[in-house]
Image 1 (cartoon, rainbow, N blue to C red):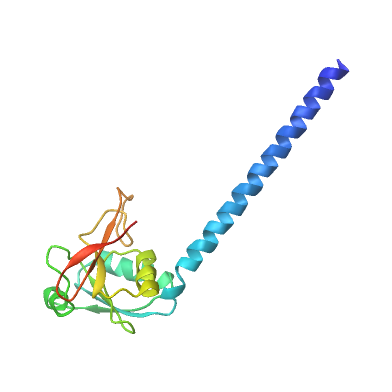
Image 2 (cartoon, one colour):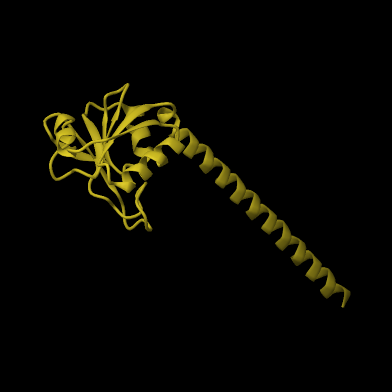
Length: 169
C-alpha cells in the first residue's frame, strides 16, 4: 500500500510541476505578445490626424476614439460632401469607405476603418504610396459593431489610383 501512495504522490507532484511549467510558459508568451503589440504601435504615438466624416455617421466617430486610445491625436471634421475629400486626397473609386483620415506630418491618407496596426506599418515602412484603406464598413473592424468575419484586406493606393495589397489582418 505504501508503494501505491508513494507512486501517487510522485505522479501528483510531477503533474503539479508540469502544470506550473505550463502556466509559466503561458504567462511568458502572453507577456511577449503584449510587448510585441506595444512595439507594433510605436510609430503612431502622437501622430496628428484629421478625420473627415459625414455629420451623421457614428461609426466614424467610434473609429476616431479607437485611434485616440492608441496614441493618435485626432481632429474630427464633419463635412457635407465627402466625395470632394476623397477626390482631393486621391482615394480610388470602388475602394472607398465612410471616412477619410489624413496623417498630418507624413501626408498619408487612411481610408476607412483601418486598424492602427496597419497605420503603424505604413509609418514604419514609409512606402511610396498616397495611402492605405479598408474598403466599405467591415463588421467588427475598428469602430464597427459585431464580431470580425474573415480577413480584412488592406490595400495601398498611389496618386494615379493604382491599388495593391498592403496587408491582411
